[in-house]
Length: 603
Image 1 (spheres, helix red, strand yellow):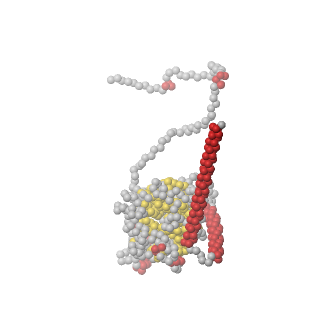
Image 2 (tube, one colour; image 1 turned 90 degrees about the horizontal axis):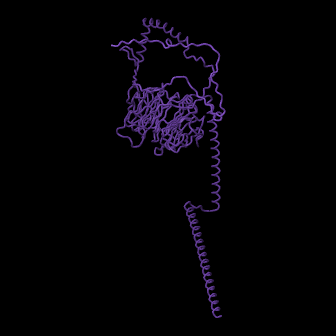
């Protein structure tokens, strides 16, 4: 066995030590410059290179284990009453309260708790937790960042057969839930395996819907009640109206009968502003607008037929595909139709003919979206064919502003709830366009490719920061908009009001000018008709005028053909005469030559 000893010692502690001493400078080598090398010198452009004295870092992404959450809720109801007291009877509860209030133990416990509550209340009043310390200071203008939007979540249809997201609705209180209606709108394309369910999603959990709504027919539209966040109302593909209370489960609480419902799919339903908070009205392509009380859906409370002739004829009614109701105008509502016409109605009119006030005609196809500006209710936005148009109630001939024709069909649009000049549109090519008409009118401020399939529905959250888009293959994409497009800008309302007023005046001037031109043309045509009537005793019918014009035309053609034939005959006659003259001259020359030959021979 070999034994090894290892001795360690610093390098500076062994070997010859370095000895330093001071001495004057000494020249060791002197290299003189070579002039010939100067000719080979090349000037180079100086370059600046920035260096950072830090360590190189690398970034990696790791998918952690997915955590699935489940939401549960408890409904608290009034309780604690004795068995002999019925809480539904007002007299019994009042009698029991009076009895308890006279009890000495109740009085003593109230006095003891009163001092504790007083201490807590004074403690809360001592400090204002909502105080803003820097509200008096002027806001520093931030640098304008380019507009952007980012995807937060995608909620996909959990069924194998994918369906279109036809409608979206945000939870009215917190905005943490999103209700989505799923159905197939293509005619006779529904398969037997297709699910009828619609879902309520939690925006934080895209893995599984929070609640399933089970209608009897696929839902085309779905809306949260703004007064009661637990209730929803939906319109079905078969025309029925369904009402849900999320506290009572997935099945509808009330369902309208088929006989009293719409005959076509219900494309839009809106809650009305009422004391009970249970009134709604719906529109369908069968040409009817029906009013409902969700507590009793056996039959509609009111009915309106969208007959442009104001006669209530359902056969001539315009199919409704979009609705608009503004709570500040409780008697007015607007309907967008399949024929591209927007119908303005008054619910409180006495007769059905007076309920249809006026119409706005401006689209070549169905009006898929219709919404008033939340800050300027007199101006409303419509989407149809390849354009989005902004209208004024005072101008019925044409819109005051419009976008240029897009390459893809527009399917939905809505205003921003926080910025009056911003609105959103979605298209068939899967693009979300955000328009700021104060910034530029011809092109969108931001265009974002959301998905590769067509987008059919759109809804903005009340704070204007989150936007949900529904696609053809059942995907609901949640996007977050930058603060520049979701924060009210300085003087924005006054600038937009001035713009709307200016464009409305311009359209009024053009409308008046067009009316003058039409009146002049009408008076001119009437005057010429009177003059023709003075010249001729009997006025010819349109068929006679056409026959006379045809005869004149054919006579002119025949005259022209006859003239051309005569001209050709004349030309042929002249050519034949020329040929005959040339032949005669040739014969004479030959005869003359032969006579000369004879004379020469005789000589």
